[in-house]
Length: 339
Ligand code: CP3
Image (cartoon, rainbow, N blue to C red):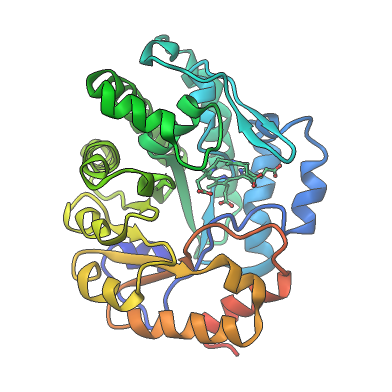
């Protein structure tokens, strides 16, 4: 029995299953040690032995209900010929693109990402029977912002300018990313992923009609096409910072779960989203970092607000690097009623 998978499939367990976005990463000393052995972050992600080890590290230490594949949302554009470099203190860097033609038209990307499939197979073989394996990809809009801006940006002005002034040209880029993402996630499912999640981290940068066209519609397209191939596959979407538009994702029928960021009131999510799907979230990562009473109060009030329906406990965004190991352990025990 896998409690996280069963919850997405319709069960309502007494305590919510728990996993954390960015549960593998720099707050773990064993991760920092492993990371030093790779020449750069991309090679780390494409090394199945190392990536499988990074996936398993938080499970060994804390026993979360879900293991998220160790990889990155930017491996897809990288494999499509837009090479990414992860620079210390800066983040990911691309040569900015201005046309969908910048993405390679060949099938070579499949070979480039094949090591990610091997990572999934290794993790699958090593995971405890009760742990759900979560595959993932970036949502087309969020991946597009990195390509158009040339990296992380605050306001995504170039991407929005392109989308608003040349919507048809921009749709071609989104469409290409939809097609590739479907096949990339199918590869992860074939290798043993139980569930997949789409990260739309920058969905909230769009105006409402833009959310509908460039975040919701492409995410629905990816999920629908995947479920044509795998009718039982649960797909979780994480449309960060979209506010009440989160309801569109929940009512679309395409997703088994919707991840909510920390700004969404859990009570609102219980009333508006939970009748339609599982709600995943939404403890503020900085509250986890703070620990103590703030952590206990916040985690319990989220759990209480969502306990009438199906809930997967998670953060509202990723674990921050200077989070203490003790706080993560305490959160897992707290949610399971062990403290
Ligand atoms: O534990 C996990 O969640 C699994 C692995 C994972 C990573 N990135 C590893 C990683 C996942 C699911 C992601 C998703 C991802 N990557 C997102 C969506 C979620 C989010 O945070 O909004 C985004 C936007 C990216 C792009 C990305 N990757 C950025 C902006 C950065 C640099 C930021 C930073 O913290 O330095 C990365 C690098 C990255 N991806 C790291 C990790 C553990 C840190 C790099 C390192 O260890 O050297």
